[in-house]
Amino acid sequence: MHLHLIAQPGRSALYSATPITAQYTASMAENKTRVTGVSADDFIAAVEHPVRLQDALRLRTLMAGLTGQEPEMWGPTIVGFGRAHYKYATGREGDTAAVGFSPRKASLSLYGLTNAPESAALLDRLGKH
Image (cartoon, rainbow, N blue to C red; front, side, top):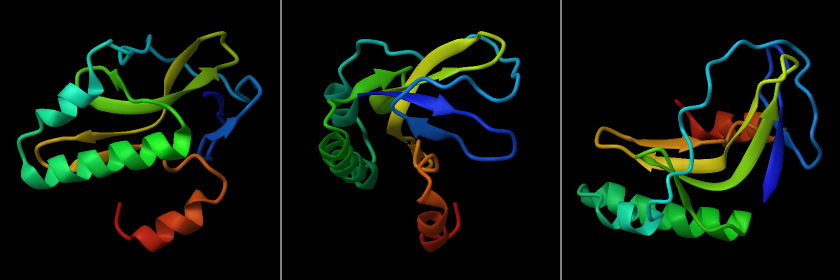
């Protein structure tokens, strides 16, 4: 799965199957969060908090099933599925996980869930986030 990120000023980014150049200029440093090659399953198995571990195992199954992709570690703590490619008018481009999660000690973080057109209504149902 290789998706492209469409960035528009004042709006959430959306994913597209075709590359689209961002409609505004963004100045960003090089993406430091990259695929590491570390086993995502080993990372998940090492989660100490029992609730976070169970959440991570469920999310791993759910996200792999929905994306059709196996997990990859993005940096030391993000379990990502699929890839989203972004490109700005400045020419800067890169890849990020299409969706993912991080079972942090304090809380569970989810990534990429606000990018679909129908996400706003679903996020309203989610509550505080």
